[in-house]
Length: 502
Ligand SMILES: [Zn+2]
Image (cartoon, rainbow, N blue to C red; front, side):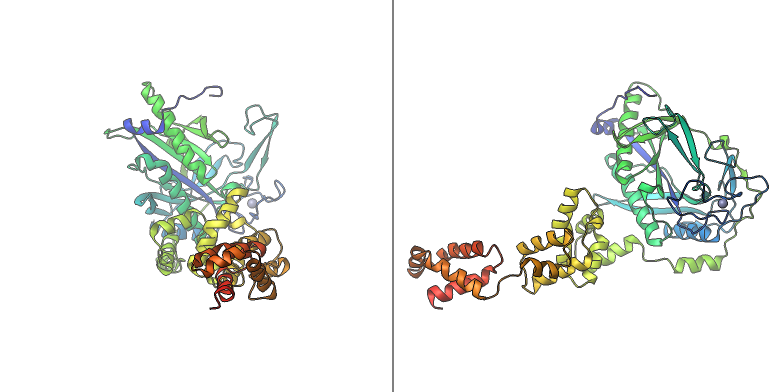
């Protein structure tokens, strides 16, 4: 496995012979205060092995109790995905030996999951793709292995390994799609759009912080290729723990190109798990994939079955928040923008920022202009997310107000923006501190206008002989001496009054 360089087929060429089928398994770590089956705390980043107890360490004789808040959160996710909520559901033991599983099995759900048969619609390049959800079930997270001494952080080449059980037993919701055929060349984008939308839904529900970089949302990406026209599904590979939205897209793309090369050579795609490498955008072989029968699932004898009450489910359904798709549709209408513009806003991560800026008093068009224009450019230049820029929606709204009131113009606004981003305070403070306000008909402006007239007798002669447009040169001169702080229409009017006496 290490050392082999995969032959790849060009992406466009893959599609001439094969149809990709994708499938996604997404794990969401719930943000409950305590773990799934014990009272241990769940905070991220605590000292290793300080958030543990006999239950989550799998000590003999300890007994689990299911976390009601986690069950509720799972049902809410299921409802948001249009799933049917089971009226009878059980936990099961998934048996496998791995150092970060202290019990020797993971408490999960098998044939009786909490939620089944939902769907999520995603939009890519103007087309809607329906991703069918097979199941949403509840389980517990594993601990974390830390391999020390190797170059890659993987076990190969490591001197020794450490285990942190703080994460062991944190509630984990797994959302499994059915195979998604028919996306063709857009398969990588559809996979990404699905995870993006799912992440937004979970965020809107407030049940997880869905931080991919901290692992609270993790994605396994399944891909297989069918020869065009074939009826049965090809063998799939499963790329594990893909840690960013961009990586989801890249992993699909890479696997499509790699599998096509294997199939072209008359080979067979091996059913296995693969690792995704962020640095190269490639995957490498992990372990051969177990079948469900390898896990020897059986019902968990230490936990009572879950039988959520129908009335409770209806109460939860009625209390769901506005979901992202509905919110986008509402805002699109309120702001009078096209679907394409809404997609840009959402993809740029600007939707919430624009919404807050509008709420702080800016016109929707102005709010969009700043966030998608100058601010997006600055975020891009400095390699940060839009929301991480050192400016708040309220400050953008204030900037916009200063422009509409005529205190500053667009050009000065960009300097004000620089000041705010540099931590010099609110826009009004920056305007005052740097003297950036547009000059009214002040002594300074009058002096600049009169100096321009005195310095260009030839231009004045031209204007008076009827070539009024020659005044433009003088407007330019005044703007220059006032370093852009003058308002051009005001300058033009002042010049006309003085030269033409009108
Ligand atoms: Zn515990």
